[in-house]
Image (cartoon, rainbow, N blue to C red; front, side):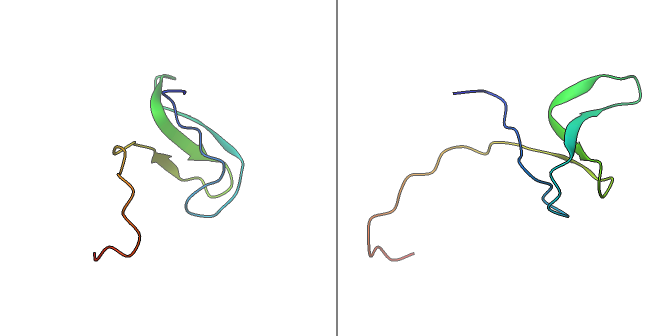
Length: 59
């Protein structure tokens, strides 16, 4: 499994034209992306794994 998540579409506009986000000095940070369609920058962060719930279990 890879340690880097790659988004398939922008979470804001749904477009697929995504590139790694670079700061003013040209360095890119892991998990930071920019959408060329809506010009938004966003980051991805893995929060962890969740355990499956048993069928019919109360919330």
